[in-house]
Each structure stands twice: as structure tokens, then as C-alpha cells.
Image 1 (tube, rainbow, N blue to C red):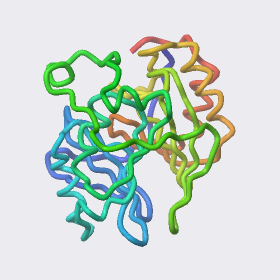
Image 2: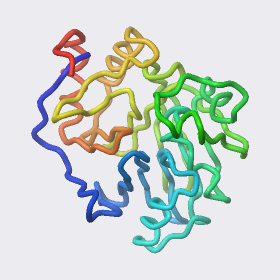
Image 3: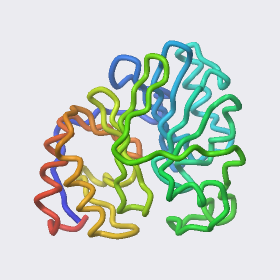
Image 4: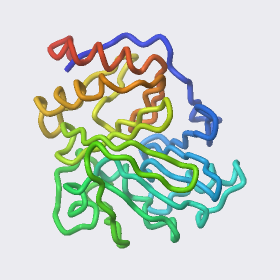
Length: 236
């Protein structure tokens, strides 16, 4: 696992913040131990990148209220991978279409049981999405009204993990993780695939790196470049 010292982190105070603006029309909603959801405000409502590990999605719904939106205003949800803290809130948004990379869909829908990070909630309360899930192909763009998202298959944390590029913001799920002011590759499923995925992301042009654990980092492209060339750095 590779490390990179961080100097440009966007601070989210979990004692005070319900929602944090990252860039124009892009917000972070985050609750400790229940994961993060990124909200992208569009003309007719909102798009979510992941829906947190709360089946009621309470913190996301409260965050939406802060920008004058309701649960029914969420039009699309993009899951980065099938783990509990990314998908639990999917069904809390009745009008949303849900998308994921095709290899993740059987796990998100509950047809298959995947490997979860060890936690009480993951094994006792792990929810599955009851709604139908739309599959995403690698290296494609999805457009909806004034919204456009670029999809990149980035296996490593799971076999079907996906990263999403929106304007100058890259959402990588748990492919990259943060701990004690360091970032490192997550090889939960396969370390070689994780490194290959990082190398694929090098060609993208972006400023912000948004991780699945809720950390938002500036100079994201430099972090990706560092991780791609230091695969055997100090273990955190």
C-alpha cells in the first residue's frame, strides 16, 4: 500500500457539519461510521454518488433539505461498489434510478453474497437494493439533462468497483482510503487490479479527489500519479 502526505484536505467537521460544499453544485454529506454520500445538484433535482450505510439515509435527506431538495428530487444514484456503507440508503429515494458497474449488481441486489468489511452492521443489517439496478459499461459517458458523468471501471477494492468523473471531480469509492493524514491503495479484493486501476486514472484531468470514506482532497491528480508509481510504500 502506498502513502502520500496530505496538505490540501477539505475539512468536514462532523460535530457541526451536515453538508459541505466542495465545488459549484457539488456537496458532501457524511456521518461517522455510516459513510459518505456526494450530492450533485442538477436542474431538476440531484444526483447521488453512493447513499451511505443508513437504510433510512437520514443524514443525506437532512443535507438535501439544506439545499432545498427532498428525497423525491433525487433522480439518479451511482454506487461505487456493493459494500454496506455505499448502498444502504438506495431505497430511501423512491424516484431515483440506480446505477452500478455490471459485476456489482448481483451483490447490490442480494442475488449473491459478497465479501464485506468486518463490522456488526454489515453482517446483521446489511441491506440489499430492492429496486432494479442499471448496469454501467466501462469508459462511457452518461448524460441526463444538464448532467454528464464519465464512468471508469476500477477494480481492486471489489471486482466491479467504479470511479466517476464529474467536471474536475473524481469519485473513487474505496479504491483509495485515508488514514492519519495518509492516503493508500485499498486492495480489499485484489492489489494488482487496484494498481492497474490507479494507472488508468492517471490520464484523467481533475482537481478534487473524493473518497468513499468522506475525505475530499485537492491536487487529486498528483495523488493518483504518486500512488501509481509507489505501489510498495510504507504501510499505514
